[in-house]
Image 1 (cartoon, rainbow over the protein chains, first blue to last red):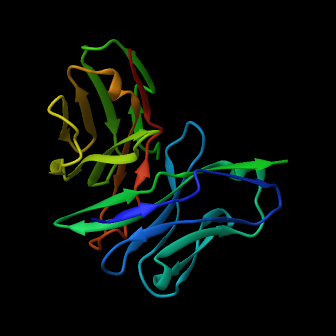
Image 2 (image 1 turned 90 degrees about the vertical axis):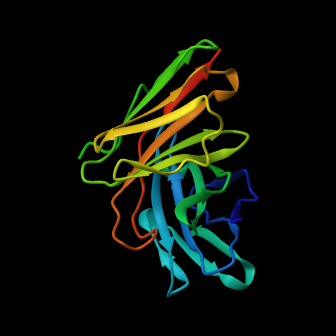
Length: 114
Length: 117
């Protein structure tokens, strides 16, 4: 079965610093990969997705992610974090096995220091 | 568009009571998903519908849980009887299929925070 691992439960960065959130997946074929963000008290919002092609994908809010097949990773990055980026971030893989559904990681909570 | 609407936003009930959570998907969307979020298990898919028909309910934890989608603009998730371990945030999401798997974005509602005492 497919799985997603986000090894960092909490990350704290200073405003203006760069950010990298890690995501590793387990999948037999080329995966469908996603990053979602959840602001406090809100539902999840899609930041970006990867299906095929260019391994560096751009998303909303200045985020990007790089697919590395050799490392089974899909890490999320932002060059300069803003205080409004404080939220919880979820990596997900799309699973196709008769039906289609998303498998989410357990999330990484980002704290931004002023 | 108002987005995905869920009600209530918060629900506190006592063990053994029936709980009903409601969802109105975005108009025109043909997929509807119910998720549960807990600290221990993260975000889990419970069930999803396509054109009002349940497609995969393998994530529904027990027979105490049931979900229906009587029409394209409404779905509910019922727990009867409720137990303290059902305490969680329940999200509804909807999407519009484009014919390509996973090319359609899921739009999430704000969630219902359920507390069972």
